[in-house]
Length: 287
Image 1: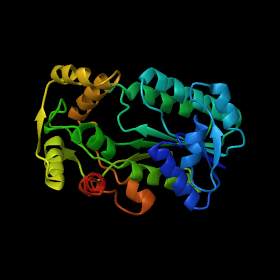
Image 2: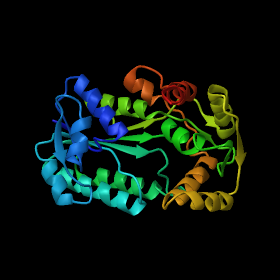
Image 3: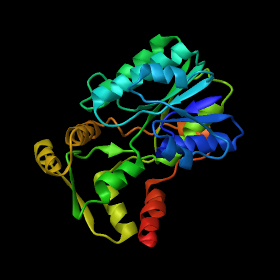
C-alpha cells in the first residue's frame, strides 16, 4: 500500500487521485478525519496522524510499503521537526521506500528561510537506511499567482532584482510525484521538477496583465522596503520567508530548467501563460 501525507492539500490530494486512477492501493494521511473523508478519492483509505506526534505517525505508517512525504508549511523549525518525525517513524514502521518533495534551493549558502529545513531532511533521508527518491521542486505557479500577482494593484514590488524563475504548477508536481511512485525502477534517487521557461518578474507581470486585462508592472525594491511592507500585511514567518525567497531568486537559484518532468511524464510542463489562462480566467468566470 502507498500512503500519501498531506491528503487534504492540493498536491497530496492530486497524488492520491493520480495513483488511485493507475490502480494502486492508496491511503491518505491527515489530522482531521472529517475533512479528509470528504476529499479522499473513492477507494482510498484514511490514516490519522500528526507530524508533531512521532509515535502516532509510526502507528499510522504500519503496513505501508511506500510513503509519499509531502512537506508541511509554516515555521521552519516546525517543518524540520515534522520531516524528522516522519522519517524516523517510517523507518520504525518498516516502510520500504520514501518519496519526498524537496525544493530546488537547498544550498549551504542559500539565503532562503526554508533551505536549512529541506537540507536537513535530505540528509536524514540519506542516513536513515530506507531507500528514497527526492523530487526537488521549483517555485509553484500557484504561489506566484495567489501570493504576488493576485493581490497586487498595478505594481508588483519584490526584492528579486532581475532574477529568473521557472514556474511549475502544483498539478504538474503532483503528476511527477505519481509517476515516480508508480515506476517499478527506483534506482534513480533525485529529480528536479520545474517549468521549462525561465521568466523574470517584469515578463511575469506583463504576461499576467496581458491575460487578465489588469494593468501590472514589476518594480524591483530593496529587501528592507519589502520587509516593511510585508510585515504590515502578513504574519510571521511569511515576511522573512518571502523576502529571503526573493533574495535567492535574485541570486539565480530558481532559473534552471531541467527536463526531468518530461522524462517522467512524457509531456512538457504547463507553461506559466497557460496556467494563468486556466486558473486566473477561470476564477474571473466563476466570480
